[in-house]
Length: 163
Image (cartoon, rainbow, N blue to C red; front, top):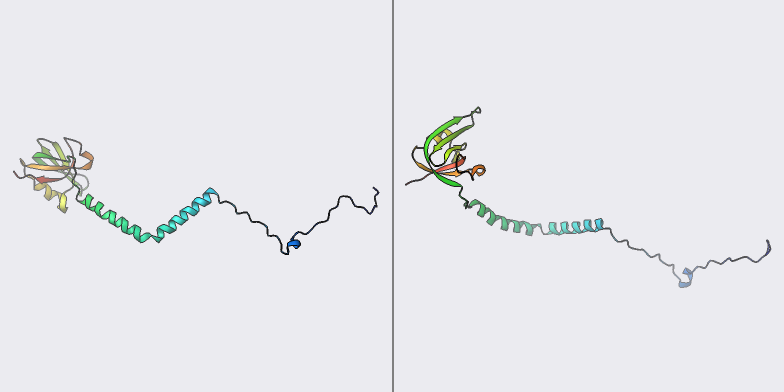
């Protein structure tokens, strides 16, 4: 072929297909699949909305469950042997460096030396310790940290045993 020939080589005309149908073609929108993080976040959000909507029912159920549980713990009798019966032979008031920190040491026949740093029912510890009589038997309720010890333990309170 010559350079200036009227014939063109492999040139195709562009055709407008949209005019054939009378309307333009819409581009198809491909919906992206949400990632796992986004899906989990949406799931948590929907659950939070459901919980917030049902908050009165949830609070009612918690109260219904908490009331019997609190009754159980209030009236709970410890099945373990956390108390022992001891005969008190002597009572000694021990004063520490702190003037508010007074404790009592009880010498007993069966249990060795028992210590007590608190008195029950808000009685001052000095008056509580002066109420003990030597030679009497008392039920000593062990404190939590020494409840497994058989000798030389600390107690929370005493109960006088009447024979």
